[in-house]
Amino acid sequence: MSEPDKLNPSRIVYHRGSVVYARFKFGGPDDYRHPLDVPNGLGCGCVCDECNEQLLGCANDSVKVAAGLYKKIPYFSHQSNTKCAPGGERGLMEAFRLVLDSLRSFCLPEARYSSGDGEVHDVVYRPAATVELNSFALVPKVSGFPYELLLKTGGGDVRLLVVTKKPGAAVFESVKQQPVPTVVAHMIPDHEGIILMRDVLAAVQKGSSVVWVSLPEMDAFAAEKRRLREAEQERIRQAEEEAQVNADILKKEKLRRMDEEAKKAGLVKLLCAGCKEETRYGLASDDWQKCDTCNRMTFFWPIKTLA
Ligand SMILES: [Zn+2]
Ligand SMILES: [Zn+2]
Image (cartoon, rainbow, N blue to C red; front, side):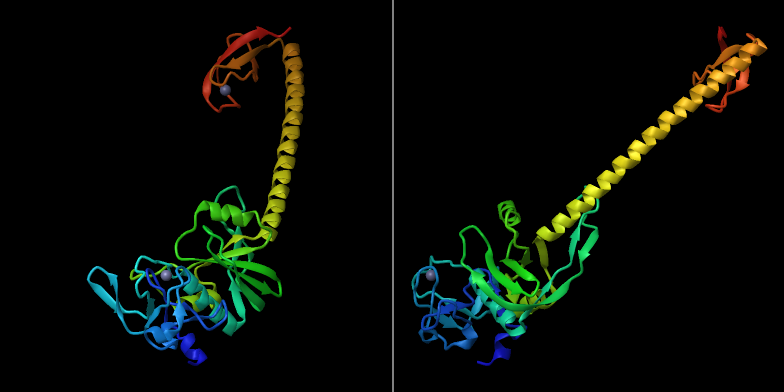
């Protein structure tokens, strides 16, 4: 089969419940084949990863995709071990391998961080960009962890996790503890459980459904930004506090002088019945005025005779 067939956008590369790519018995450990590229039946020469049983190539069988709904899906069938269910994730990695090998590039998605303390990632750290691939390799599968490719780019290593359902929090925790920048491709099957080569091409070429889960360099940058912002806020707070202290001193001094003047004039100090400010002077009977502090027409009570 020629390359274009292998990268045909409408080729089914994953079907939930079926083995769409299987290991070729006569090839290397990473030689996986699609049913459309091998003869049907036992002649396919492919074996199951899980139980090692020789599989049957089924290029044109109808497979149940929903209740009462059948669709032509190329897959590999077990001969007898019907209980074996290896899933299709390994096959999906083969689709990624084919696309990466052909394009020799990968689109890293846009990277954003949060400017505040919230979860909204509103600041673009780096726009989406296509990087050249020097090489890439499938990382040996760890149980409970998604399939992973290590991409070696001109800008450094990037881990690419490929999942068909949202991974648990433990996976993200583990990823964040590693120094290598990591993206995850959320390859979510359609309602019939199918992923097409088109979806893999879009992920690799355009970064569709690919997101950063760890970018230590950006995290350090964002942390430094946050530190600077907090230092600036603290500086402003201290300056405001200082200005307030100075204003209080000036106000006290002004009052002291007003008290002195009033005393000379033989007046008493008055207190606003509304806001309790002691800002007025008058005769003991001077009582209905507008308060400069609270702006109300109110009573002013004589509070003491100025000593
Ligand atoms: Zn099996
Ligand atoms: Zn007042």
